[in-house]
Image (tube, rainbow, N blue to C red; front, side, top):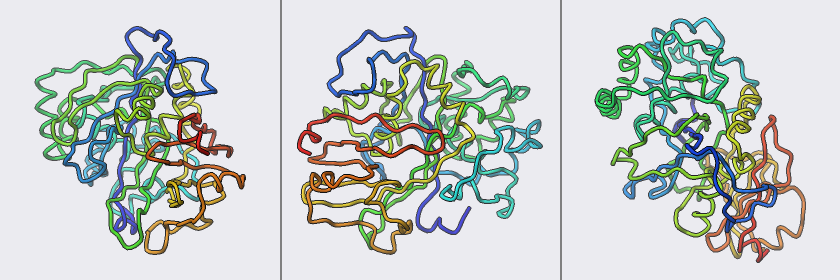
Length: 380
């Protein structure tokens, strides 16, 4: 939908947080310490899917469900599905504050490309569709649904399993079938349950080397209970529900691999133990929006630093396209860089072990990740 798509594809992903059946967890002393969190009594878990070993992008990684935005997500046929909301701003989502560094996914006028579907809506349709394809979770509401009643934890409606399984296969083969499914089932994708959380652009790994890159909108929704999940045995080979702390512990113990954006966002979620607090937070900042972050990588003598906007090492005008030098090489150690002080907004990797260093003030009423005490930090 914009002229930068020759450098990357647009995508959407969904952080699915669901209340656990017991409502609480017994306290378990975590191996990874979160100094600002009082305990490990989260009453919710987050869904992570394991990508196939054959995947061309981040094989074997545990990620949130999501995928590429398709042309069908912008299809004007969705007008019939959302007929009672087409006259409302962004189909009843409201008007999000616009920022200078906001992605064209949200800011571009889709009507100039022949679509009547706003980017705010299409990206959410994509996240819901991909979540259905990859996990079997279908986030829809009846066609007579009142979006103003959508301020509570989401209830996933039970559907005919056999019918749902057939539709899932149809949508996997042809994403445009998602529109037909909603028409026949007389339902709408529950776009109002998805709150904007963050926006990540895949960094340039090395100059002159083409790699798969994605401008990905991260949404989040809070469910009242864990729905049934099944992997698709294609892009996804397994899945697991974790508390944010437990997922990070397994990553630190080398049991799983989590890419940097997921690592950062899970660390943010560690601020919230009760799901009601998380839900209140995402609702309160739902119209604040966010800026797009592209990590700029600094290669040091003893490790790698992923710098983010606001960090003193981050370029004032980073080259998003990767046509210029965007990987910084330093003869210094990571310890020397840190001892210089200043503003930190970075992910440090030493011997493959991650540490978040963040001391900047978050924008748009968001929250910084909880920093993690790790063995690598002891070297700093």
